[in-house]
Length: 357
Ligand SMILES: [Cu+2]
Image (cartoon, rainbow, N blue to C red; front, top):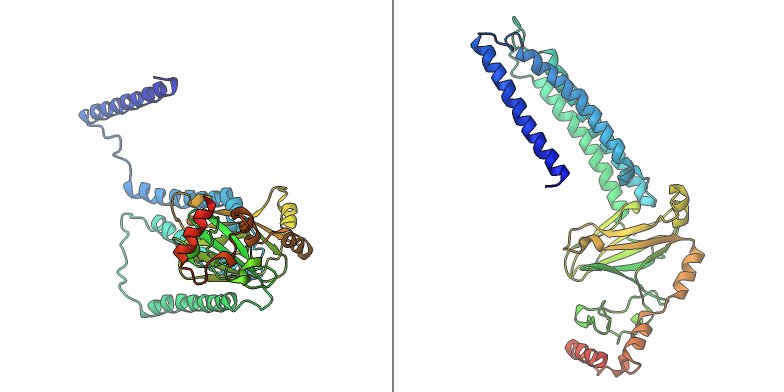
């Protein structure tokens, strides 16, 4: 038995001894017909405890919010155009909800103390008041309607069609990572299909290499976007539900297998500016998965770099298209032309497995 366990056991024993001693003391007093609690007024004690709970609860709620505020994304201003709107709605809703919650709870506990039972005090029988019913139905209804209308308007702005000249990015979720695709110079994605997926030849996105539009597509493990430009993100999953989330930008959209979703946003602050703002030279935006998707869910993170347009163009220029990499890795013979015309997806997969071996 180590020291800590010994101390714990000693504490338990000490507790039992104290309990037994006080129980005995109480029984002796009762035998002598002395009631030590005889003069206590339970109504007064209960009323006092209500006030203790009210003050203690308010202090605890405030202190815990303070302690956690730097970890709460709500306290870090949004860094995208629509994110500022989301934050405004959040502030309004939280402000109203907080005001009502705090006020009603203060009154609830205060009245329990103020109108505690006392000799001669009689409860008032007050079963119904139509005017009161109307007021507490109509006021919340109007306030909630205003909040909902505001929300619907913002939602439509966010979910509108992405502007034509948006930067196109496709994020592909799978258990357990994200793969990012850029459409390349032709601004068009090549066709992909689940039946072409072939882990051995590294065709994890399932490119159909017969589609030449895909030959310049970039496949990377980082998101780079220029600041102050619209970004249109297509979000896909190849297995289960994931959720592509860029919390700083207030972007969150589920990745649904078999049904591509999308989200467009405009980043306003570069990674470099954020590093200065936070005083953290290692700061990085990230995309995470916020849908529990299995054992490796925690690992689904991706670095997001927001940079100047020149830096972005330089980065894009450095990337080698996936098709060229794939050819290098699988031998020059294994090109789209080498695939038999109209080959079934199985045959293509088997052919590439054979080449890899
Ligand atoms: Cu996940």
